[in-house]
Image 1 (cartoon, rainbow, N blue to C red):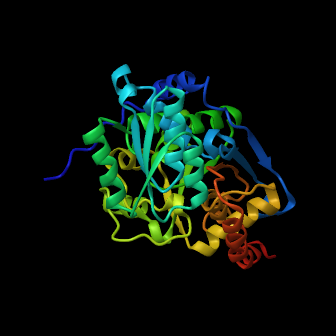
Image 2 (cartoon, rainbow, N blue to C red):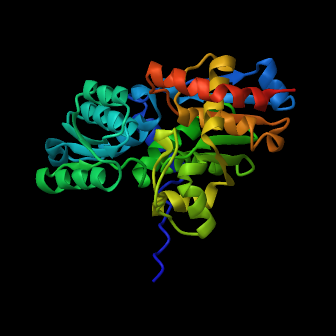
Length: 340
């Protein structure tokens, strides 16, 4: 029996504007920067890249928006029992931060292969961190905390409140750069792009929205191609923030409605995007952010000639050693993509 298509009407433009306004006291309205260097102007054939700097958001990524949107919905009793989350790192940090904003405790479950830098950031936000094996064990432990401690689970990427929170990124971008021809967004589980795409398309249906996934974690690409959410058997990418093994119904439905296309990148290209951010924008970002600019340099380049393109800089939670290693991995690919 085919599962019913989720009702996405909750993520209306009116609801996006209301949610963004309700979060505005605690969420930063991150700046936009036009990346008009000689290289980027040449790459885009006279067009321009407008960077939406969510790397300057609280907790270092866009994740604070969705986490706070969900946390604010909790009643007094739920706040008293606290929250939990399952994450590779960034969502755990954001969930702990959001819990602190509403006066709740946070016991979060982080994958055992997570970067220690992100674990430390979650603890610095006040979280009690439990480490579990990636995948099913991480989510099972969060479910145990819901069952045994009565905590509320804040999902890393699925649900109307999450998408309404992340839609604020798209709303702000379209207000600050109203003449965009396209927006490029990296995809993990779909929480960010589902909200952004809903905002962008309801404001300007002619503006293209492109998603970017690693070849080794292409769950949304496969889900859109098959017409239903897909669960991958395994994930293999250096972009840990984009390593969600599945798409889920609500995010998939929003992407089906509003997303124009998903393009795929190998890991060297993702690292090349990090090099591009460092050399052209002087920004040190994590691989998930690098993927968006890498798509502009690579598979989307011909389609974006002469266009004004919004590029979502989704986060920058990366330690120095990992950053240097990934930059070295991407340098040759960056040189090849920008030659001539």
